[in-house]
Length: 395
Ligand SMILES: [Zn+2]
Image (tube, rainbow, N blue to C red; front, top):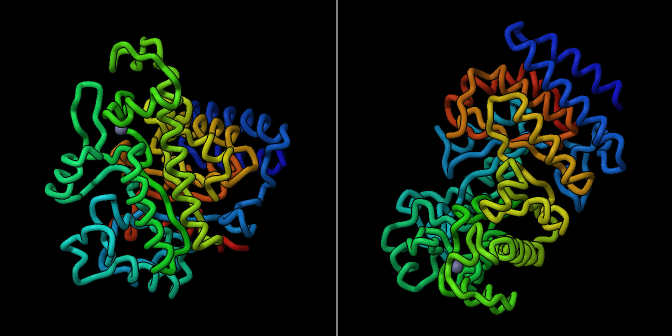
């Protein structure tokens, strides 16, 4: 195994411009050390074990794009282009807990989706061109919801509140009414639509000082028996219950995820469930309550997609290494790459092709690119089709 990857690394280094030679040596060293560590343990995946559904193991590299609810010029044309470039999955944003871009019976429907059911259109086009459609839900943030929807949730005390008493347009994950609402959304999507997968995005807190709503305060004290004398100081960094409160926050999200996954799998045992998560798992689980390693360990996901948005080769390789070690052989690591993300801007498709090669050298089960746009279709897809995705995902 090492010799195969050693060969790939030589090829990879040769293609780099001399000015990045030094950083490529560092990255290559990280990759080789990483592989030595991963391959030396029994947690290593076989070199070709790229799996898209852990219920039914298939040797397929997942090649996906994140997208909005609609694409230009339409879903049919986009799916055709993706399929022609040997891509096999799309992750459209289809709802938040405050608005839907499909004809929901549970959520307010966006004015842009009155004439179009974007989920039906994406699924029909995807299946026509053999591209899997994973409906992506912005789980807790009420992004793009109407002001009156957000106000109604705030008035009902269902939103997160931070340590300064400020309300944020995010559902408190502890509130049973919110858990029930999310369950109904998931149930509706898996019952009424022939989607291939579900992806949980924004399943997190906005930051370290959330959620301190009255319900969370009561529930934390009840669950842990903590004797809080001063809210919120006692549970914030430096306070006597800071560590315990952070663990409890993580648990709230993990329990919510497990409930939603159970709801989905009860209707569709074969559905592929994933989560888009932040890249630096230890630090980000503290800050955002998102314990991705625990979600993997508990078997809640069929694959995990960390958003490794960076142009820094060493960061990219280091995050991959850490993630691979945390995941072991449990599920595939599907690497998020962000040529059009807020976090970074790529120089061009060569940079993306290089990240795909690095991800493969870590035994990744695939990649998802942020995001599908006309520019991506025009400038990136043709390049990838000649290069990183020139061969079929399913050899
Ligand atoms: Zn709360």
